[in-house]
Image (cartoon, rainbow, N blue to C red; front, side):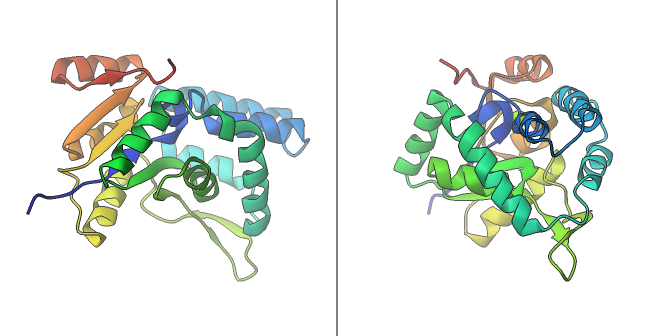
Length: 221
Ligand SMILES: [Mg+2]
């Protein structure tokens, strides 16, 4: 029997051209829920993250500190509202085609992102994918964020680890799977799948993709 795979899709700068974390920071700022300093820190992190230069664990905890004590169901509702207002319409045309193509072949399409579980779930539902893998923030007995993230963080090697577990539970393999991303930080997951594809890649990833002969796409057109 031929091993079957899935199609994994990074969210930020892959399914959409922007970083949803930065869009969220701006939206929160517009609604007066975060201060200017917090937003600027978010923008700085967003930029550094894009260049794969930061300690992601530290950046996450620092960003999360702002939300400690906030109810998870409130953040879920707020993220859903944000997603509908600012993200839903941004799905890139090429991304939409790729999702349909894989699903048409019977391969599940999965959002694989380092954004929050709420954003990932909103994306999966809105854009008709089959599942999502993302960061879940743990809560206390009253359902309020306690500042911790379920390990492993869905970033770098953590993405590959989570995707492997997801495949195994469904009798699928990473070797038969495809992964689409823009970011050099996703190199581990690109190397783990049989069909790595880079989409509007950052300069570092573009160099790697050229060297290894990986397809380079631009979904913005
Ligand atoms: Mg990305």
